[in-house]
Length: 147
Figure 1 (cartoon, rainbow, N blue to C red):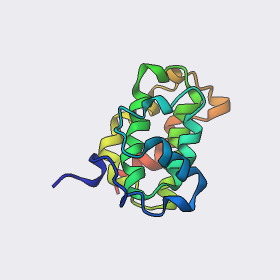
Figure 2: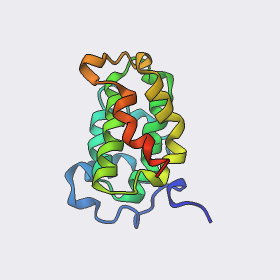
Figure 3: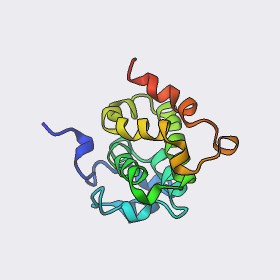
Figure 4: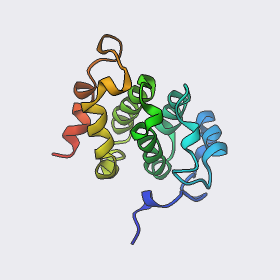
């Protein structure tokens, strides 16, 4: 059996998306598209928008497309993109708080990105005085793997 978050979300996975304007907008951009196909929607100031949309997306949609966010953050295009790295951290923290288990279920898949962000703040040109310490901010997510 293939895990739900490894397949492009179908219409049933998007159930209820119309109730949130941001998620409705995201549906127009992402529906039916692969992780690779949505990469162009991240970075250049757009990652904060994607964070807001993914925060409230139905769980299967979040669990699939958070991997797209992770892929972007690990790409060379994210070098120097402090806003994208910080938005990724905020998304994981707030989503897990709002919907317990939603991040934990995909933690194994996201671990390489989480570790990279936690240990490479300079790569993103993210000043600690502005963005805080990435490792410290990610600590609650890192602890999920031990729970």
